[in-house]
Image: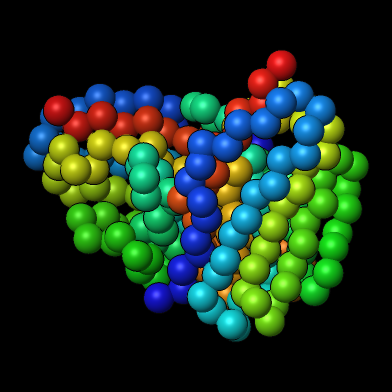
Amino acid sequence: QKEVEQNSGPLSVPEGAIASLNCTYSDRGSQSFFWYRQYSGKSPELIMSIYSNGDKEDGRFTAQLNKASQYVSLLIRDSQPSDSATYLCASEAGNQFYFGTGTSLTVIP
Amino acid sequence: DAGITQSPRHKVTETGTPVTLRCHQTENHRYMYWYRQDPGHGLRLIHYSYGVKDTDKGEVSDGYSVSRSKTEDFLLTLESATSSQTSVYFCAISDLRKSTDTQYFGPGTRLTVL
């Protein structure tokens, strides 16, 4: 079973703080990892992808990958109320994508 | 939504009736997927297609069938709907020609089986 595990939360942070979201995966054959944001009643939207060990930054978002520990994380700096959503971690292996159950984030103004 | 539409967007039906959901893409992507999303379970793969007439089962395929007669259309059929199939259904597409390709999701279909 190719599992992706996330803390379901909910996670609450004050506006302007750093939100840290974590994810572990079980399949060492997974090469590609993704973070999706999903607003209530909407479809998942890709916000970050990462393929090699280390950090990848895009604006206020930083994804971190550690393949030895089978760990993926997402940092959101200067959190805004508009960042309040559920964040899904996903891995890709064998033409299929495997999703965690999501972490609910609330940014408090 | 990356050129993906789903129809209908909402449907209420009764137990035992057949239901077909349609996914249409304009991106000419090879791979198409059907997921269901339920509280506490996240996104679960029902079936996927890797080309015209080429399909395979996912994690929760029982009670569902699919067909893909054209690159742009992927149909999901519930032969005899049950209340346990009440869910939000998402279609997704992917090219996967490069290792860096990812999935893009349609807007979803909310299905209620009474």
